[in-house]
Amino acid sequence: MPASVCELALTVAELSPILEREVKEAEMWELWEHVEMPLIFVLTDMERHGVLIDVNYLRQLGEEMMRASKQVEERIYQIAGVRFNIRSPQQLAEVLFNRLKLPMPKRTPGGKPSTAAPVLEALAKEHEIARLVLEFRELEKLRSTFIEGLLSAVDPQHRVHTTYDQTGTATGRLASSEPNLQNIPARGDWGKKIRRAFIAPKGYRLISADYSQIELRILAHLSGDEALCQAFERGEDIHTQAAVSVFGVKPEEVTEDMRRKAKILNFGVAYGISAYGLAQQLGIEPEEAQRIIDRYFERFPKVRNYIEQIVEFARQNKFVRTLMNRRRFLPDIDNPDQRLREAAQRAAINTPVQGTSADIMKAAMVTVWRGLKERGYDAHITMQVHDELVLEVAEGQVLEVAKFVKRQMESVFRLKVPLVAEIKVGDNWGEMERIL
DNA sequence: CAGGGATGCAA
DNA sequence: TATTGCATCCCTG
Image 1 (cartoon, rainbow, N blue to C red):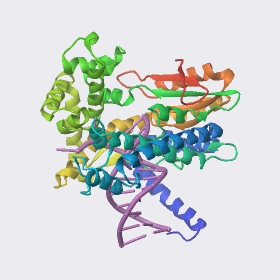
Image 2: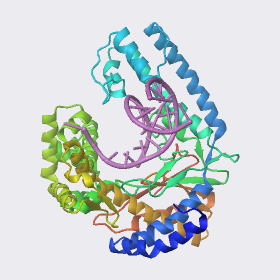
Image 3: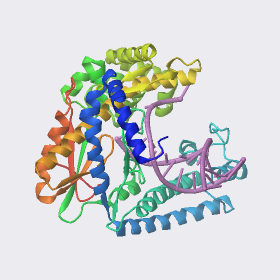
Image 4: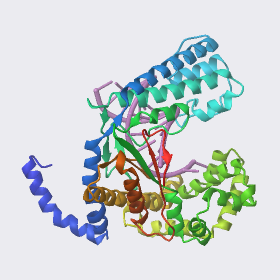
């Protein structure tokens, strides 16, 4: 290790030409020069600017959740006939499975009785206490992690400043920490209320710009599957189309439940899911899941080809690449341990998809940031959540900036299918209205 | 006090 | 026995 900053600087200078040659030989120079290097300044700006939090609203919401949580807690003690630490999976399992003799359907990988949500959901129908524990968990999770977490992170101006890690993931995505702004609740009544605490200052509005179905579009591009590409070119609802193919019905006959299942299937395919895994997700038999998967590949045959090809590429080269040549090495692709080998195969399938999405978003951030600056807009990028950018924009410039951001995001990289960015606007992150 | 396990939040 | 992350809490060493 260098013993001083001076020595460090000299070491970097010495390394520079060597690393430059390595990057060029890996065909990653353009990614480096046009994306990762300029992105540093974008991220710096985002971190320094921060995002405004409605502290008083968040405190009140926290107190409301605390009251709700205490009520649920007392009911649990009443039913259990004993006071204990509901947060401790160990103590909870003791009460549920020994004291109250509830059926114990699953164990954790560590061999202990599982109290995870799917287990409690199965018990909730018959046993009030399971439903109450789920409610308690949701309230306490959201309150302790997000309300207390955000409140303890705000600066005197009521802004939080996350740290983005540009090199922290295996696929090229960003990671966010202290606080993590990429896992703020989005669903559920309480979750949506938490998002409302992210606000625009007086005279400004928040704009959210998110890539529609970007990973499935990339899968369409990478596989070249005609049916999948066509669905996107025609602007069709991709989950409904998958439901049509898999369940053999007309588009107007697709029920909400069929679309829900097709959506799970679409995501699963990009992750390299197995029949067993899909069955687990859908709550059906593996045989039925296998039939659904077979129907899917009948309709989208080149998706299966892509999966076979990319796994073979990984076996030959011990790495896979994104469209912008980002690499992920997969040393376990031929590991004798089946579990590790299959995990590496799924990573080989998913990384080009997830990683290309990260490439495109990073490139878009650079062009959007530069454009805002060059045009002198009173607008800042404040957050990135993988396929979404959130911006703080002066009230009078909202429509102009929204159009600009949409155009930049959609044209930053050309795929075989269109890229689509949807633009919403609002005074807070929880209540936004689609405008473009 | 560090670190692993369980749990659960997001895309 | 689906991909990528991070935070909190519990519990042990």
